[in-house]
Amino acid sequence: MKKALLALLLFTSFASFAQEASQDEKVKHSEIKINAFNLIVFKSVDFSYEYLIDSESSVGASILFNLQNNEDRDFEDGPVYNEKFAFTPYYRRYFSSKYAWGFFLEAFGMYNVQEDSNEYYNYDSNEYYYRDSGETSNNIAFGMAVGGKFVSKKGFLFELYGGVGRNISTSNNDIGTEFVPRLGTSLGWRF
Image 1 (cartoon, rainbow, N blue to C red):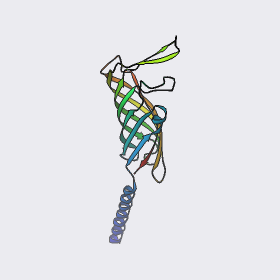
Image 2: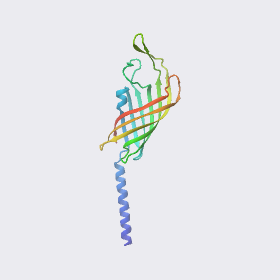
Image 3: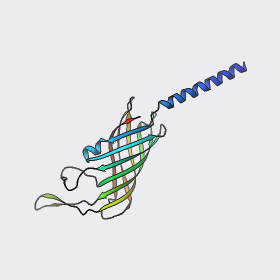
Image 4: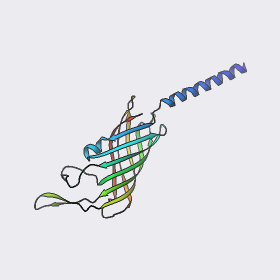
């Protein structure tokens, strides 16, 4: 009887271990994304890669290139980024029973390069003007963001997030802004 009970316990533990291992193999741990919001609104390309550590946390990085040419832009055209380039590593914590899905909090760091944007409005001619000094400011910022991520069964994902960071180090105080935005509506793939 003891041998049969021991064999049953061993079989049950091996079966449950094998089931956990097969479920872990099916979990996809990588995501690639493009920020459609920045592309449409700010004329900036923003790509991200995220690695899912477990069901509640992940690390990732995004890289932003501002495609907007300050000299050619129409100042009444809409919002602009001061950043010409940004590299943003981040850590996310998810609050859902699903695997890295739903509401999340994000802590991020950001290295960004801002260009001098000497724009002014001439009331006599009723026009905006731009003067390019060619100066830049290299900045380091830290901040927080909140958002939500939704993933289909086949791996397509949609996420929406927003937050703000503060530049704690700037190479040129005349150009570097005090705050930097972290905004996005991203589309991507979990694999």
